[in-house]
Image (tube, rainbow, N blue to C red):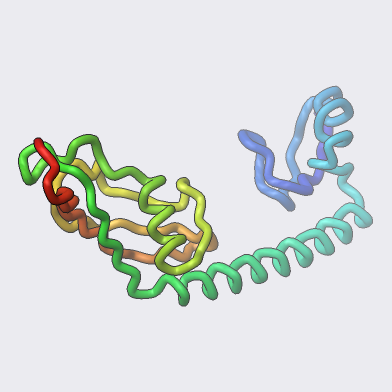
Length: 157
């Protein structure tokens, strides 16, 4: 077994900065070429400290960006109109993509559909609570109001 210093988090092996024992072939053929680990030396420890400082700086930048977006999304409330079958049940559902488009139109913030967490499917008229996950541990709660879509004048059912 060979001891290596992990330079990055490796699934099922350890976190960055840990010294772990691995098979020599795994270290030589997998970890070293992908720069996931280095031999345990003082130079590798200094390099790891430098990498951690750079990563901390990047994390802080991302956190500042997330806080700025959270400030723009504060107190967001969406009203979505959708056609209904019987006045309460929706014909289909309101999905995350609809909410992303509504937020972009309402606040001018581009989000990924993976950032929105819905408690359940939106298939009935009513008020729902949802959250936007901006990363870095920052979430923004918001309300979704689903109302019946107004029918056009003179339209037959």
